[in-house]
Image (cartoon, rainbow, N blue to C red; front, top):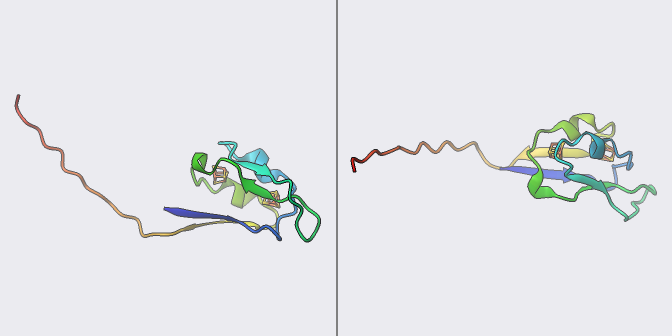
Length: 83
Ligand code: SF4
Ligand code: SF4
């Protein structure tokens, strides 16, 4: 799993992340922050594929995506039965 965070006060609402997101997850809020900007937020969080494109593009490093748990590998054995 991954955790997604946009720093509300750090974001300057440039909209770059909104533009680059391949899944159209992000939008700008209508709530103004302390600096007078409209920060981005995850409007459709379940569509996010954690590709990190938005983090890389953000000029203010306001977006962070971190892994919340260790990678777990579940090896499921396929059993074949004769009908
Ligand atoms: S991680 Fe990728 S899919 Fe998720 S919001 Fe950022 S650009 Fe969009
Ligand atoms: S690219 Fe960064 S500064 Fe620009 S709107 Fe997105 S989070 Fe905010």
